[in-house]
Length: 268
Image (cartoon, rainbow, N blue to C red; front, side, top):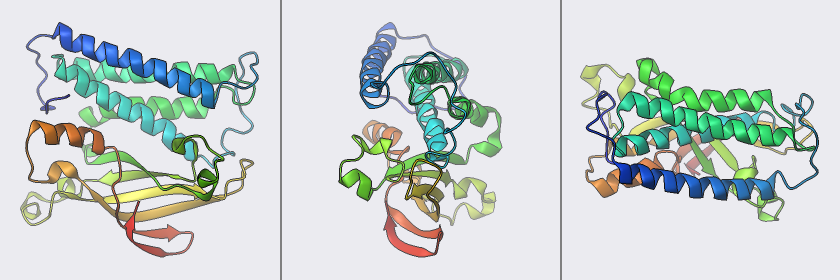
């Protein structure tokens, strides 16, 4: 769907009405689906007056949910940025509008949570949402942040396999969040000719044995990650594929550093 863009290009040849209509139509469908999904997963319980959750916010998932609240507006903001560039908007306008849409949607979700007796509005979630939605802007203005991207991967947990969660991204024990470090971008120019640009370093985190009352275990990983943009492959189809896969940590060698060292030939 999206053509490759040059981040330094801040000009526009004119916005395409029909392409913007495509973006708007897809967005409307995605909002309807997302609202229905969340209504079924999190908002179908007992309602209450708007309230803020101070008690359970940082306990029930050991903070792993905050990674998710950063990740999803991050990819939404990045995806919309590319969509608006594809539609003909200039880089800066695309970036700010995309972040605004991502943050607006996540704010809507948090407010809806505030009327749920079980959940409540979370300032921690909202802060993570805001940081994720604006991270692409920070990367644009702070070059030191550009080598770092956020990815996700899933490996079904025992709880998910026995049906305790309807969808896998609702199970934090099945979810792994990764910071992918573009090593080639950090190396001196004289070294970049010998280092494979498609090999990144991945720093991963997950949680296990949650009791949703503050109990459980953090897991930390260090491994390789694949930078698909560094592969010597060209073409619009490849660009479109990479635009989707760049958010997912594909299986790669890794080691679990905590708790206890465990080596993986391929870690999902």
